[in-house]
Length: 405
Image 1 (tube, rainbow, N blue to C red):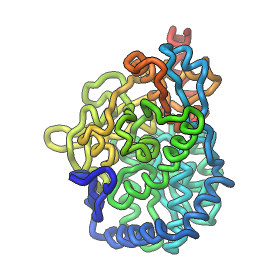
Image 2 (cartoon, rainbow, N blue to C red; image 1 turned 135 degrees about the vertical axis):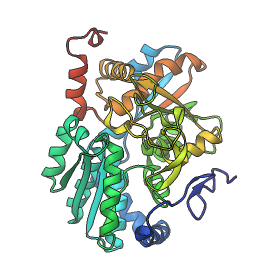
Image 3 (cartoon, one colour; image 1 turned 90 degrees about the horizontal axis):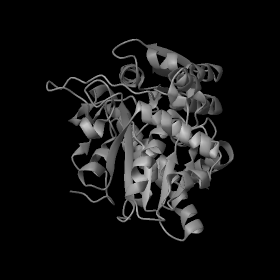
Image 4 (cartoon, rainbow, N blue to C red; image 1 turned 90 degrees about the vertical axis):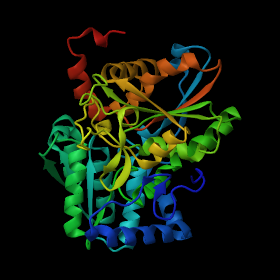
């Protein structure tokens, strides 16, 4: 099996996971993208332009913030640092990848971007870079996600994007992905599909990982400057898995650093009530790649459920499946109720309102800290801010005892 230094291989496999399982009509587009990205990786001008945009437009580097009161609340002298991707332009880590893919689209002379979105953050980021580069933009979003992420729908439309409601299936992220692929099949000559996570056919898991690895590279340098050593653990939420792999990947060969991904446990771990793919899934093909999926015995994709639209997905990136297989990372699930507690914990100790997605990772700290040695150091990927989720949080907490600390 290939080492973590060499994955994916030339045809996009992370061990047994990954590959290209797509209609023949998009194979040429994937080959073009693969070639364009391999050239861009070696092109100093491309890399310089991306670095400049990340700095002057997106707001990098993001702070590595020592959460003093959160650390005190959790005890044992454990030091919790937050990698503040929530402070980026558009409010989440998604802009890192969207900028990189927009530059590639311009190189390939594609004048139209399409994207899928769940929580709306990737849709907003794609609409933002489309406006920046003067490209057409169309975003596919499940009708249910449009209802619970109405603020981001308005933001996308204000940016000039067309938001297409997806009414099939569960009307969430899985169905938005399927609809985006169907559209891409018929428009490949003029359209670049800007996938928002480390999912899909090769080279998407590779290029999205590389664009998001700026998170971990910065965090590594910042912690060494602050603490003079590497962290004991990295913690991040996992849906498709881009913010987590972006944090984990630069530490992949540091075996003493634990990598912990936190999935959506929903209301229970019974089928159809969660989105904990790595805990409860089995290998299969979804949206162009072979990875872990939530599926029944006949291979039909199961319904998912999560308070967080961005984690509400029945698959996961193939590199995460590979990390689980090789035991480089471990994965846990946090319930909707625990995620709400995570929101409250961070908001009331640090004055930082997290999105519901990273709130799952915050909540997991209460489980993790007692297992760590005293004075351990933890970096948590705070992938997005919670403005978009305020109404959902209010609806869940209103009239219940859950809002009382």
